Length: 281
Image (tube, rainbow, N blue to C red; front, side, top):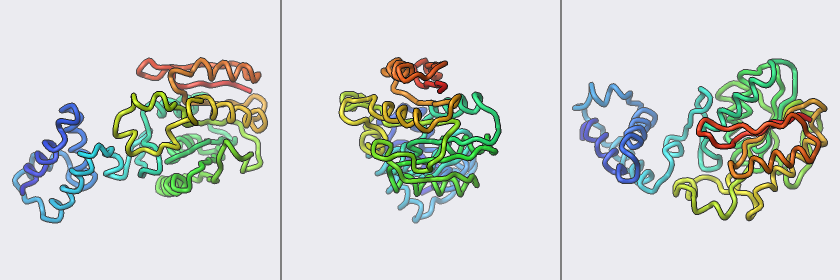
């Protein structure tokens, strides 16, 4: 099998499941990240042999992709805010919308000594991306999943950023760090059971449900708990940031206002959906 025929075999195997452009993008990601073949090699070295070992690996990858497994889990990596993050099924795949949240946080403060907390850190993409820019800040992060924390810790080591991690479930525990914070950020589970049927099959089958779904149809449960936490542990004048379900952005704003937060702002993402909220204590 040649490199070109292997590439076409991969592309043809799942092109019925994706738009052509997306299928080609996935195929190129696989060849570059799994087989260490640059896009130019597919053209320049098209007639070179594709080894038996690589052919066997390709067969396994094709099966995983045909089963709708996200390519990020197949390659074990995702790119976020200009950096490469390790991912597996213990963590959500970082989304572009969350990059916008990180950018908003960075624009809303300065690089100074301050305490920043990321609740429900997952892969660590928010905490680590903030620390890379706001290097003077002390960044703390929690998650209820040990599997997620293992990935987050590896990402912080790979990207050489010191983050203080603790296992903690915001629904059941108090402040595991026993300090006050200048900024609290969270992208909590906010999809309701009623919305599950609208999600893509690859999300439902492979991404961690505990990081996706609120409890039952209570989309606000994590927001209520985090706001109560912020009332105790966010400094006066400190900022709180949320990523939100586009259907509940106004409810999050209302909840913050009812808890005496001020300067509350609901912001849309690049797709025009209500996606982020900021408020000041």
